[in-house]
Length: 49
Image (spheres, rainbow, N blue to C red):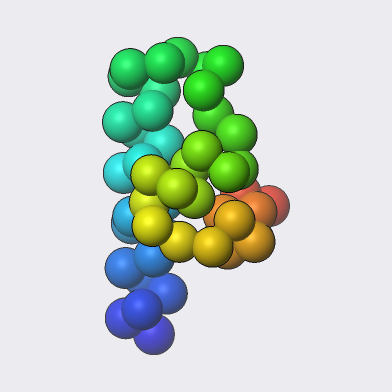
């Protein structure tokens, strides 16, 4: 369960960082996944919740 929480926190941190530097235009799955160091599919799973 810890891995799931870690991945979710990485995604949240990545979204915050991208939003601060690029605004909402920079928020797309591939960019978030690259910044968070997770698979793109995982970003979409968390995004849908």
